[in-house]
Length: 83
Image (cartoon, rainbow, N blue to C red):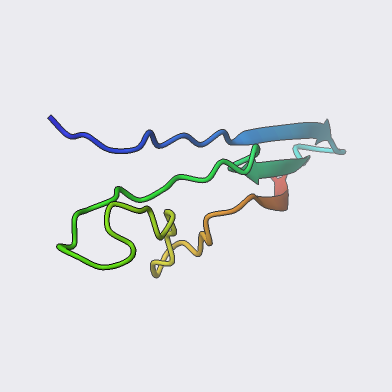
């Protein structure tokens, strides 16, 4: 069993698709990641001693190569044309 803080994220996406002449289709969408700006704390570990023993001192961040998620609310506008 793994015990730690709950990890919660709410993502939202809204889009509008419009038919263009011929077989063209245009789509615009707005996306929000971590919409409610929930802080996902890292688990508190017992380091042994010190002033921050059993205190949460950091929060979730994903700054990997493919994703740059600083841990806060993110939004983006996307447009696409399909033929």
